[in-house]
Image 1 (cartoon, rainbow, N blue to C red):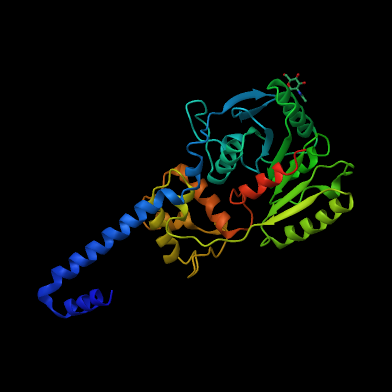
Image 2 (cartoon, rainbow, N blue to C red):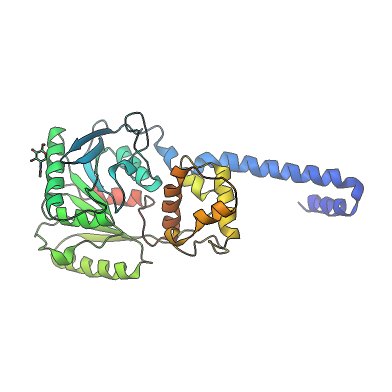
Length: 338
Ligand SMILES: *[C@@H]1O[C@H](CO)[C@@H](O)[C@H](O)[C@H]1NC(C)=O
């Protein structure tokens, strides 16, 4: 290393040797590129599922909403997934010939892959409006879940549910009627102050982002309420993460690594991230799309905007769906099945 540096230093002072510097710089760039290239595949969280599962969902319309599901070979449990506001069932599944409208948001799709790899049959349903509602819609969806489980002969298997945000409130409510083995409420405290919690309410895991302090307080309060009712509760706290040049391409399948690096540079240049790579604000509050337009680099296809937003929100860790804790979540589901 020392020798190399000395040579470089000398070369700078001797104009004749400029080609050597250029060559060295070229070699350094090539090796960095190679390192990035070989790193690429290891970092992608979906690679571990490649030989285990593939998206192959079925879709059906019923009671004015759409159901998208997939049942793996020899399923050992059933999971109902409830999305947040402004989202739909299609957001959980990658686009394919069987589901051309599917979107496959990065965290949502990873959650489904985790579930399928652990042999959970996965059922997703879209809310009728922007967010879930708790009267007629609750009855309709409870009916759909019961009917679907029966129709696919899955009635003997453990049934669990995970809802994020509005979906978390929804799951907290339907769990007072349907018999779930356990539930996970993600970035949602649930509606426990608006219901008569039944005696055998299922074990509840709260996966939340403590940066949202108001919600954290409510979760602490509701965990105490549930515990006093004899309900098994637990929580997982999700903290902010720093962006790295390949953060976006490591989490969004259709986002190119070069695009990811350039976006990261742009975010640094615009001051959207601090010197350690942490987002200064929520993705929703960061005008990164405007910055992109000003930069005159046409980096993104339109359908990458939502996935990037989701990842920036995840990195900021205030309010977003997350698949990062999937192993802990599914371990928890699996430990509450009998
Ligand atoms: C849902 O649709 C089915 C079949 O059309 C119907 O039998 C059922 O009553 C509906 N459920 C509700 C809650 O409306």
